[in-house]
Image (cartoon, rainbow, N blue to C red; front, side, top):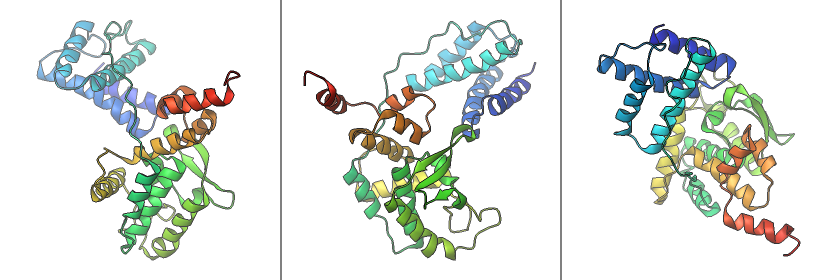
Length: 298
């Protein structure tokens, strides 16, 4: 079995059987491509079936010289998943990464924004330009609904159920969920739709896409990152923020205001409550409030 053949089969497995998004598939594929490049550069003639634990360990050792522990751990996890697939399909008897330990890494708590920082970012948007109304609606939606950036750029007009107070969100693996949308977020989306979007020459195929660029096409993920980075620089914000920061902040602020984890989990679209616990990084102040409110010895 050749590497490219094995990689193609694995990509189909990730897409069809595991239902992963294209972004996740690309990430897994990149891990394998790094290993293939290492073999080529070092003239190592090993196939996916014959590669040994010694060779994979040598590869990990070389990678470790150039990346941090978190990146190294993620690479090992990605390769382990690939070889587990080959074992599952009976191409191999064992996983060559079975005995390779991932480096110990601490839990990386996500950056969050305060309510004042979010307000400052949004009020710094230049509303004299057409894209200003769009950008305000984008930030209000990211924060008001806790969306991933991929969910935001793929949001459709037909996904908006404002009368019912919900939007339909297509998340990882094309799994759909309904997320509440508050009146203030609805207001800014409607302003954008009526005052800006209605005047854009929309390109074929994007008639139902909510947020558009000036050429009438869907915004890219990179463009959302750029918008947020520029606003952060404009107000002199020292935090390293991204679209995901608004999702973190959405979850954290709900938790701090006594929302239950199960509800937050459903709104974020997490399969496991454990993911939600990490995501909203249960802080000491919240735990103290829980004890004070519910413990009989309070």
